Length: 202
Image (cartoon, rainbow, N blue to C red; front, side, top):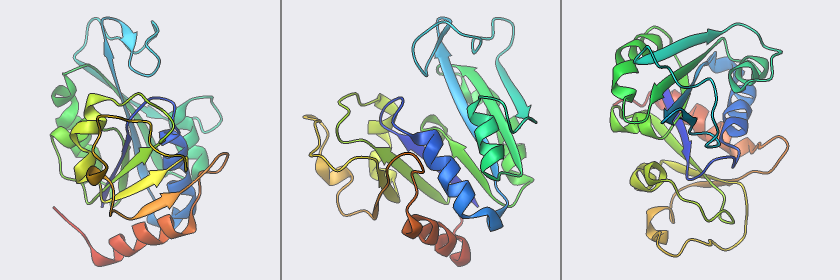
């Protein structure tokens, strides 16, 4: 089973949602992957210079082995993931890493990926989009795939501040309201395990 978790903006809790899913469905023995894209030496996470940029390589794929480090991939392990990986590519070059990523999720029973852009290349069994209705920023990738979401994970209950994003793109979908610090909703875990039981495939 391949589950993708994306969202419309940075720093709205996507990693925390992934951790909550892993923690609440440990019986699925997840492999977790975080995908980071960068442009012009700047990280897509916060726009600052960082170690994401790879001047000599098309992509990097690193397995996380430390569950106590202060990284998102460490958080996946601490939440209960069996394995955890960080994939880094330049913006627009994710396809270069796809064969290596595909080998990972085809060699494991259940994989959860934090990314929007991976949807350009695959149709997951489930795509969950994290929305914070109080954050105005809306990434192009989040907008592009919003209508493909199987469910919405809402991290706020205010009225949407977006003026150019049609509500029809997310209204009517199953919605699960979560909040910090645990970003947990028991029905979301049930939604995922039910999909697993149905054996959803492409």
